[in-house]
Length: 302
Image 1: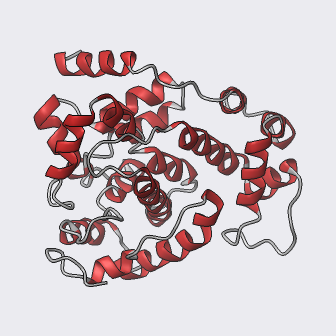
Image 2: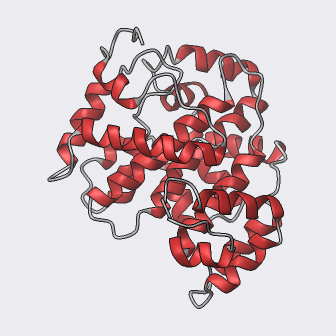
């Protein structure tokens, strides 16, 4: 272990990370046995009234478009799949634990808007790259920046400086972190995921999301590439998208017969509108398509 990695683990150990709810822990335990089905997975969800409401609101949203209301957790799991519900429940649990630190321009609402767009993109990208099940990409991309609010809470002044130094996306936060600390929030996210006993594939996808340059030429890593490419999407509170051309270049290299950049971004904008009410998120002022058409260097007039 490098000195910087040890410093990071010591920092997170001293941060007294909140514990995952028992319902989420039980879902993770059930996931270890492939014989468990909707009947088993519905029990810990139904034991948590708040989670039950979230799951049913999720399944009854326009995102799925069922013609009748689903009122049973077991039926919800049967209809949309164990992995989809499990990952949604895990993200909801993590979502509820994140602090909202007073650290410069940090805004938790913007972070979750960005996370949802990146999750939706990673899942769609994974499908385009031929993955049969891209639900894990959705969850991992949603969680890729979960370390940021925790780190900003522990190091408020340093993160305030880093967030200002991002300069509306002209500089990557991960690069600024590595220059200052020797580690970044991607590595921190991996440490946190393992500390919570989240699936190892989540930890790996989270900790590699800042490595797009290394991953884009790895044909056997479609999951990692999808999550890492999602990290290049613009932040919802940035006035411009400085990395747009870099993003487009990587996407064109990877997409094969998939949709054009604009078509895929428009799909993500529509899915965001359908999904956001479930999580009580507002829609960003600027859509991804708006950001795509704006100059990558100049603030949008939208």
